[in-house]
Length: 318
Image (tube, rainbow, N blue to C red; front, side, top):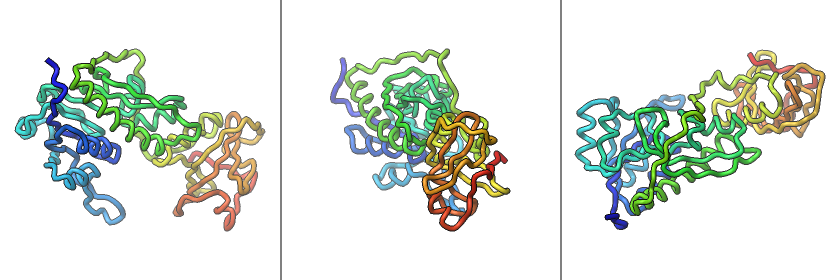
């Protein structure tokens, strides 16, 4: 018989900012977060000061026990989790693939918030890849965790439209909040016996591997439309970049144009208060904000007040 009043004992596993709204929603909700598992503290910033993950900060403020194992595939760690007698484990951007010893531990299994509409964009960077791919729709999928990389059954997908000027950063914030709401809805459905797993169609799967700093290098031979997606998908990190006279410039706030040009891709067509208009493989790309090497991000108009960028100068990929 379904118990609609049941309160789940939950172990939460997560690490970065993306995980925080989900944990806060659980803390504020009817269920009990009995423990939080997160990555070890890491050095951060120029001073390399040891810094706790955002999830740890929230958990400690709520007096929830925090575990930060360096190894999770041990009987000892599985025993520590078992001692909390969880009904359910919820995973949100924890950063490691769970072994069977953890997956099989709670009666209701392990549930994950994945930042895409599965099976599209499986992997560590689904939000960035949604923007890079020019997707018109994005979302989160509440899913069952299995031994694969985001291959488990889908429990609750929730979608939102992708704005024309969407960046990975702005979509990150939207999906983080959306994931928290979707998770609470999924838990209510589970309580009611109405949460039903649906297998993924693996033939439709695409990959979303993690990005590196080098991935931000711009290939100017691509079309302006493709490059607009690229610049927005790389914002805020690792940021799309090119080189002018050996200096690295990072690019933000793009607008694709059908304006044709005979100039080589990467060449400045026009530079004024509206931004940098750059030739591409097809069309032109207007860049409204830049970050010159060693300086802060600023509008092109602000940069031009004290520096010169002229038509005919060409940005290179390296």
